[in-house]
Image (cartoon, rainbow, N blue to C red; front, side, top):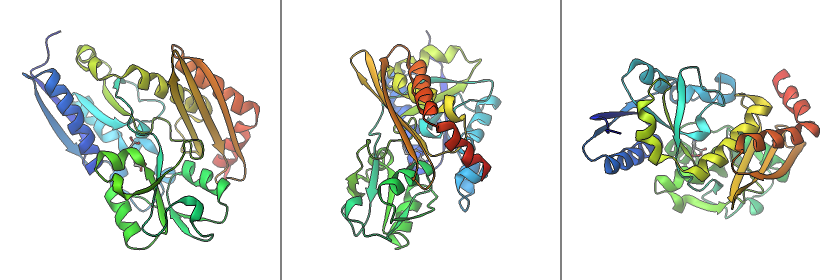
Length: 310
Ligand SMILES: NCc1[nH]cc(CCC(=O)O)c1CC(=O)O
């Protein structure tokens, strides 16, 4: 394989997205010192529309569409995404070339006044726009009030500091990457807040016809993380496609097996179905599908159908 002379990375312009793109840039630069690796920063629709919950304006695809356009136009060779923001079905013509090693997958409790969720007084306002976080929080703490919180990480922290919320929930991965881990008051046990599918992992997307890039990007793939994320995406795909729903999945590698937990809930958390399953690391998608089937057997379909009819 001859490394290309130039590689252009498409990235959103938020601080976290740029950190992630620069991380991949550095990895590529050290693998291929003679290649010129640059970043093309872009604003996406998801970054512009900040006043509506994501679930209402079309979901995750809004963060990746403009980057895909740059790949299609040939303005960029690869796009770096948080796997959490990558839709379950990529549009035709695009492919994931690599999934990077996972950063901390946990949700984090961030507050200026309180040490942990457990000590948050009933009636406190918690900021999150994730139905997954909302449903799991309300299941454990029905007295908390959940209010919408959108914007990039810095915006969300600013809104907390302005006093609009008693606490907010964020992905630990993003805070750690930006050197903001000191803002975390409590790491929420993944058993209590099952992470989003792919949380903490980076994905590298390419045009499907750029087969030449597969070998170039292969060293960035982290096989264990890729298997875990494929299992999680397998569950989500089997249940809900790309809809924005209160659902989460978390797979971990143990030897040659994956141990996986998944849940589906009502938004108010009054109904919450959770299942676990072990399976071969070599068949991650099948494991995710089998976990989805266990959830469906307990009524997951009914819960998800009720959501889309509201
Ligand atoms: N939905 C936005 C988003 N996409 C990825 C991350 C965090 C980093 C990651 O999960 O890799 C975040 C912020 C958050 O949920 O707090």
